[in-house]
Length: 191
Image (cartoon, rainbow, N blue to C red; front, side, top):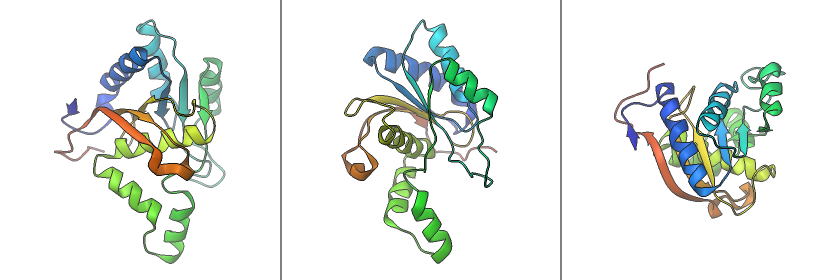
């Protein structure tokens, strides 16, 4: 399914698609979320569908956007953990140290090229792949098993994919089996 526009207005549709796909496959849902709002909505969608599937949230690294801070409020973290969500906070697989090098010295480096290549399919696809890798690296998903990933362009969700992640060290062994939904990329997202 291709959405007309990128952005958070697609969140409810993406979550329905992701829950249906994960339930059919009996797999974990990995969701990108900086504030936890998308994951709270995902939990509500699972409950409404009568499903109890494992959920992993991949959030922003500490220090983004400001040193010493994290975008996930402590109360939301506690609420998510109380509902069984595993929360991954780690360096972003497709930027991390390389972004620091390119900021300091200029240029572009191999992992950043991978990220930009994935963005040709949309920001959400890039983030789905990145979050699946991060969840695998942290042991939050079963190695070698497919997961349904949910991500977006900015806030909310506009993309869902079925991915079997490798570890970051084996990045190119990752498999994107299906892109369940994403923006058609015909129009720019509204801020």
